[in-house]
Length: 315
Image (cartoon, rainbow, N blue to C red; front, side, top):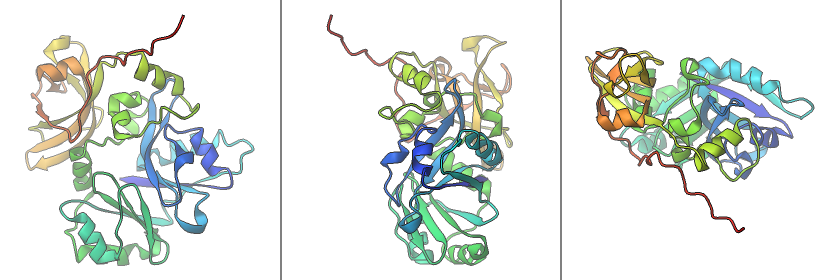
């Protein structure tokens, strides 16, 4: 389930730019981006998408993230407001969130709502409603809570109704991870392929954890990445440990980040896994002798673990 945080006020853009991994100041009204909020150790506390509303409210930002992290992140961000003119609010009760995904999801949104949305753009429609498109084609609709049933009914006439697990399935198919409470503060952004997906700006100034994230990008050797798998298991809990003979019987080689049922007896999942174990195709669920996971292809290329070359310096 997704939640919504509204950050508004004269200093909202500058404030978020100094807190998040993305280049918030580069956004024009109506544009959006992936973001992460990191600990001082560079580990992702939460992530998601955000956008600047088009029109008169363009000095604010709406942030989508896992519902179970809305209040912890709202509180943590609020600690750093100090004298800035910024208001940070949990607006879940004021807004309804709907999602459209699958074959011709753009056509369903166009027919139901009369909107055409390009990737990472937010298009307002009607009264107090916005459609926002992700790069993988999924579309979020955020609207006033009172309008939720009407918009839901309009979408239902053009698309099949599905549950939150189906939405997670589409996110897994797109290779886009969502940090939830069990995985908060565990991974640097690169381990979750957040650098590949564009959720980290390496050209902006300081933000929490920026030095560690940059050091990993340019000087480090990343030993784990996000991979996709399929398991012949019906229910897989987020945070479940993974094992591999590559690392012995007593050492975990990875962690489940997101999972969704794929068939009545199987599931797909995204997991951060040691690259050596993934390359050996020996990753097992829950225990060294647990079910063997089947590797699935991600819709984007994952770089190898070698560090980037250093720029030569003149003596």
